[in-house]
Length: 289
Image (cartoon, rainbow, N blue to C red; front, side, top):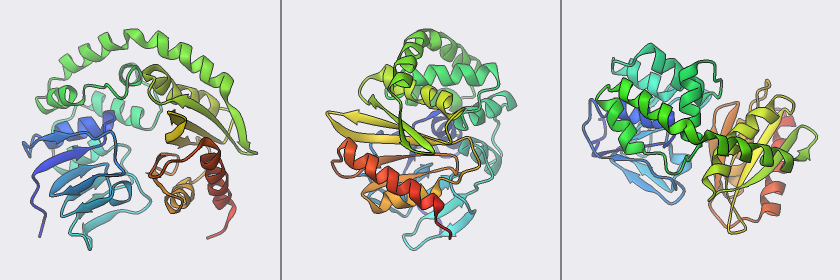
């Protein structure tokens, strides 16, 4: 028996928002894009890129995701129905294919490039910049509504206009690069102020630059002298899933792709504590299964 869906709860990046907009074509329900996940209790929802290991409780819901190592279909013990397809580069592409929804190839490719941080097209570069300027303040409801209506031209015009402020992000990127420090022989990290929208946006760009030289790059967001969240990435042949598994045991929610993922703190953690947890997590990569 499939769950009774009363709302759509989605990850708030481009892929999650576009996926939610597409999905709302077949289920015209309230859309939610929570910025804080660890304390959430979710029931009777369509969850797009939000899984049980990221929240306090998730029951009787439809889970649609592409993060993971193995496909997963059907019901779990909490009454959640899963559609997990790791071969997809973006959950929006998965949703479009599964429900046979119109999704222009140019946009499909651009969202996939943004979600995998492989910015080859002019459109993906534009989308990246328009989001990175202010990820927290990204107008998710507005964007999802344009996707729902298939108003791609208007959405592109909005993104093109919004990216004009990107120079401020580029300036912050240079500052963050100067702050980067070695964490382990194969990794570096830098911190950024989570509540500074330009630093938060610049953190991803700084990571992309560092990834060209360093196997593992970590950005740690700080708020009021405590760790808020972080992103871990690699462009090498490294599977980061062991890192996420270890961090979950140490009081974080953590997950993502083999090559990029993140974590959020469930308890107050100092930078020193988090760095030590990350060092121990990276050591897990050297252990044989």
